[in-house]
Each structure stands twice: as C-alpha cells, then as structure tokens.
Length: 91
Image 1: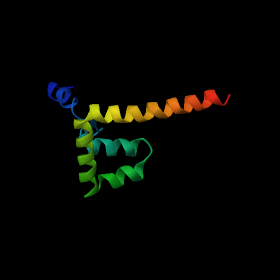
Image 2: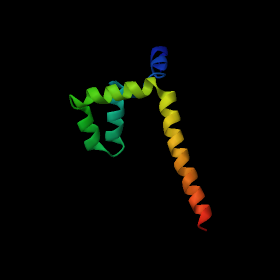
Image 3: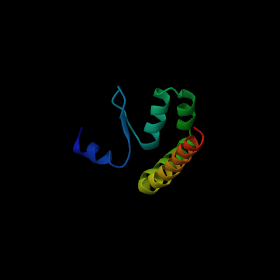
Image 4: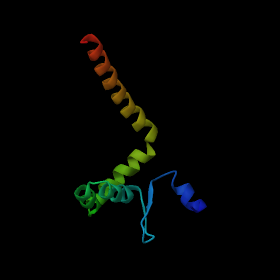
C-alpha cells in the first residue's frame, strides 16, 4: 500500500479490483454489495443518477462518523436494554 493510499483510507473505503481498478467511497460500497450477495441493489446503486445520491450519502456519513455512531449506538443500546428488561420481567 502506498503512503497516499494509506492516507486516503482514513477518509473512505477503497477496493482494488483484480484488474487493478481502484474504487473508493460509494462506488466501493456498491461493488461490495454486489460481491456480498446483493447484486441487484449494488448494480442499481451504481447507475446514474443513483450513484450521485450514494456518493452524497457516503460523504455525509463519513464526514460525521462520530455523530452517526453516537446516534446509531444510542438507538441500538436502548433497544437491547428494553429487550433485556422485558425478558427479566417475564421469566
């Protein structure tokens, strides 16, 4: 990995395809969706104009990772604790 690539990976995910093509950010996410068993969603998300919205969404989430994480973690933890309390009340 080059120093430039290492630095760029702090800001967005990167995928290096077997042919050497480098995908980053939203395009990399769509490629990964295709590879992980969601080919239709990944393909449609890669089409214009959808890719513009994917890239915008990726940019917004990546630039606000701390806030997004706090929001998501808070919601998940609240649900887990609520389920645990319900399980303890009804043995």
